[in-house]
Length: 414
Ligand SMILES: Cc1ncc(COP(=O)(O)O)c(C=O)c1O
Image (cartoon, rainbow, N blue to C red):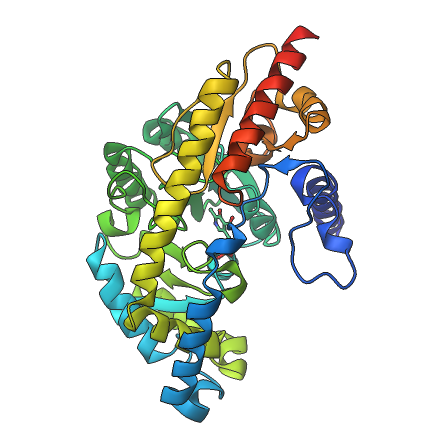
């Protein structure tokens, strides 16, 4: 009981902390709101990981919707097959095989997106009180999903190339000696949120090997794989592992539209069977059936391929504009140029910290997310900030960079 109360208070703290500052301010309690994003007057906001509105495929999606309804008739509107509709699974199977590894149809379960996929997998794998390892830094909104399972989150040891497999093995040994169960590790190894970086290939192999030996399931959040700008993404952990070691989360949120709330899980057949056997799937059918069938049409018609190629070009140009702007206007920031995804990680010049800079930046009309939010225990990242280039056109990104440069100089002078 006491533990439950503590978990509730911790969740409330995280939520109020998360929603009361920075770019998320206000979005939970805006009655009648249609969308999550809340613009703030006078602020060019680099905090939001949302798409540029003009890149959302309104016309193409409505064409696909009409075609899917014509093609499937009433079957598009009734209860769907448990793992997701056959046409989407068939298209995904072919599509994923063009990427880095073949996936059998029986290894796919259609979800409401990557967040839903994580919640489902955590539900099946994690018991209250378990330790879940998380990359450090990693996608901060995964933390409340995992804490909903009453897991204790522990950051993995890292260096400047990402998770350190040998030191993670030592951590696992220590946790085992303390009698802790560690069923899973969550990581975004490709064009990561928040750093934009990729785990190097040799570390991928070592990590997968460690997980196999330790009986640990790696949950690979592969949300950004297809948004690669400078060449192909590195092989997924899923493609490197024996079945049963890695579960991969995919989503159409970034490549098509987040409002679809559509994605998939790649997992061994046994886990897919457990997912299809869940009570609420039995009761309500496969999730998001009508949208999933529309996505199948969007995929097979070639619209997905055309759209992806167009958005890649735009997001690459947005990244380039932000990088060029920062190099010209904020040369004291240490940045690494991401090869894909939506985010850039910038390190601040000492003694400036992300929390001290935030109000100065807002006074200069620019906002970001503080680095510490991406560490499960909040310890780390105090000198780093996450800048998102997904939601703003190149000229606004250049303006944001100029404002950030002024803010950093002003904070340095204090
Ligand atoms: C790494 C990562 N995983 C998951 C999500 C959310 O995905 P979805 O909208 O499919 O739930 C995001 C969105 O920002 C993300 O960056």
